[in-house]
Image (cartoon, rainbow, N blue to C red; front, side, top):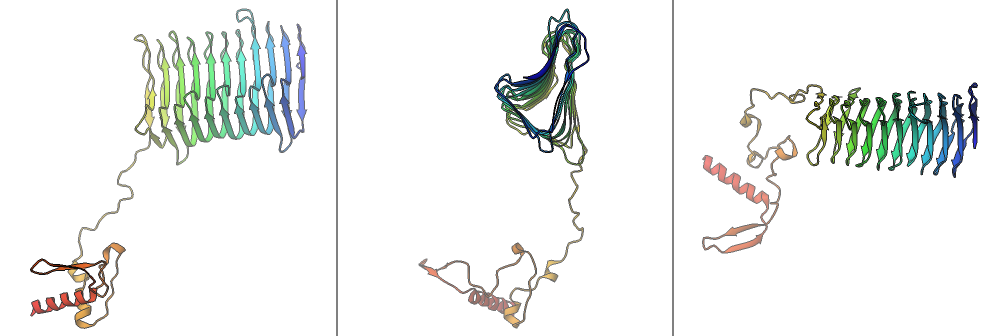
Amino acid sequence: MIGSKTNFGVQERPLVTVRDFDLLEINGGSEIATRTTDTGRAGHIELEGGAYARIILNGEESQIDASASGGSSIAGNITIKATSVTIRDGGEIQATTTGDSEQINLKSGDITINARQIDLADGKIINQNSGTGSGGKVVIEGNDRLTISGKEGGIFSRTFGEGAGGEIEIHSDSITIADGGRITASSFGSAVSGNITISDNRQLSVSGEASVIGVDTIGSDAGNINITSRGLVHLLDGGAITTSSKRGEGNGGAIHITGTGKRNLLLLTEDSRITANTAAGTGGNIFIKMQSVLRPMGGENNIQAKAKTAQGVDGVVEFQTPDVDATTGILQLPENFHDASALLNNRCVSQASHASSLHIGNRQGVGASPDALLAGYGSIRSEKRVEIAALRIPRRSLGASLCSRERLNQR
């Protein structure tokens, strides 16, 4: 363990710092931690690697932890700067406060991670508070790719008392949540849960029945979800974006999905959903402003804001998509048609006058040449209906015969 601990007293925050590393790997239950009890102030943790630094947390109880318990203590902040952060198989980064919620005033610290790539494969980032103290923030910034997978994988904000839940803010170009991964802000007490904000995003994918971006409460008001995308927001195979108040008269939180730039799309497939529901309160409002919103046929791809009981009030679902002119790109046809007889020569003129000819047109508009062979085998039937099969007739002979008949008719 690398860390600091404060017991039963007030002191200036100690600081745990690790700098200029290329690889920081925490395995087998090892940890970097600062902890305090009673009225102490837990220290901060700062990890800042070199240009290509990697941080790996691997296995149960392998963690980076800034925690406070009891009294009115304050948890420390965790600040991480690296090229990549990987948390897997039960590893955790957490800033938490714990204790009797009726007797303590604990404020959890902030977690800030600046990394180009973050992979959570059954790994967690947790901010949790108890009592009357408020939760801290979880901030992901400077990120090119965030991947969350596995039923234990996720970014979590939790409150268990009267203090408001912490915020989750993610600034990432590409986010993939799959196989039960989650980004959630929850309240298990009387306080409102935190909000979830996702911005600077080009591609957001939520796939799998248990995969969710969600805000939920037991009986209080749910927080809001705000997503800003300049590209694709895709929910598939049961993936969901939800806010809900599961019991009592708490209200469902609002969901805002807003597109920026010229090309953005919200796509729901394979029983995916966007919901802002409540039990007996008012359902949250859902506002979607995207260039296109697609819900293909097949499966229940729901967007709804419902109250689950008769005492509740449904929320409002509003779409704002640009008006599309259906005639855009359609050419105006001319009112006056050309006389075809003035433009097309008699196809037999080359045979009659031995003149040269030129045909200009597309492939479908050019007839077969009179001088070419027939494309297949012809058959000739006599008056006695005796068939002579497989007789190959040169097209030139047939064309000359047709032209001769035409000249005789003209005479």
